[in-house]
Image 1 (cartoon, one colour):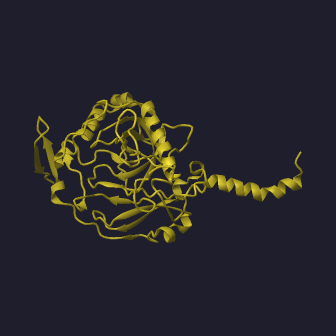
Image 2 (cartoon, rainbow, N blue to C red):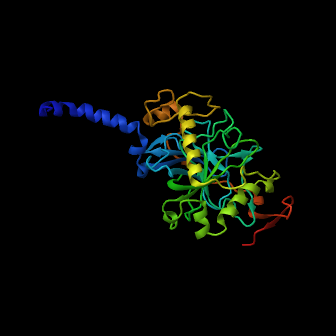
Image 3 (cartoon, rainbow, N blue to C red):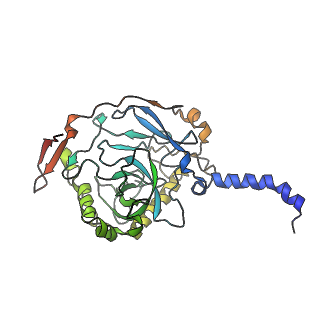
Amino acid sequence: MVGKSFAWAMLPALAATAALQARDNPTSAFDYDSLTLRTVGGRNTLDWRVWLEKNGKPISFWHDVPLYLDASNKQIVNFVVEIPRWQDGKIEIKRDEPLNPIFHDDKDGKPRYVESVWPHKSYPFLYGSIPQTWESPNFDHDFTSEPGDNDPIDLFDIGQDIGYTGQVKQVKILGALAPNDGGETDWKVLGIDVNDPIADLVDNVEDVEKYRPGLIQSYRDWFTYYKVARGDGVIPIIGDSYVNATFATAVVEKGHGYWLDLVKGKVDSNEINYNQTSRPSIPDSFVPSRAAVRRLDIPAKSDPKRAAERPARFDQWFYLDEELGLIEGNVVEE
């Protein structure tokens, strides 16, 4: 039996070990209530940035938010909202800047937007990414036979919440689409907010059809045709339909493995900034969050500016003709 005096003497060392384990196991230690946002610049501009903070210190949306709420249930994953429902700005995680802030993507040197293709108003769902996953471009992936798009895996949330940019929430995986977007693997995982009224009733794509008929096909069509309005082609869906929840969950798990190799520095990072603040056991990418502002030259506090106006073009609806080739725009009447 261990003596009481010896046990008391060991307490500081045990506490230190537990603290280190907690730091290196962000799933168990992650406090969602500690999250805030640090915003610099104005929306609808290319200078706009949003960093995630934990206890007031900057962390990475991509690399520091854990993939799972509970690793024993891999159908439930964390989700970073980049584009709230019914917004049209193409908002993404900036993969090549320190701690990967959210920013407004550009096209031809100007902020990029997505047209409203009837009957959908802009993005008809919450759209964003799954943290601690990566669609590696370093090889051709199984099922798609194409390289990855070099981003975290995308997810669209069909729950009723409107959401906000930078929100971190939990969703249940229900399936996925595999668009071939310009010769790249670009998985779109179908998920639903765990707090949605039907979340406990749906476990797969087919279940959604029971409770929200037509939604699944409608969103598949959106991913197929949404770029036609800007002059691009139809995006083919590999396999033509959704894969089931089991398959989609396995895709996410594989993407997590590719991400882990990324932050460990084992593979070509393709210009991704993979600094992270939550895993000190991975020294090649680890930066203490308390030192991130100084070492990574991140703004020390929020400095929001007035939003710029959106181009008038995106106040229109666009309609596809029967052959999906011609576009016609009508200004929406208020």
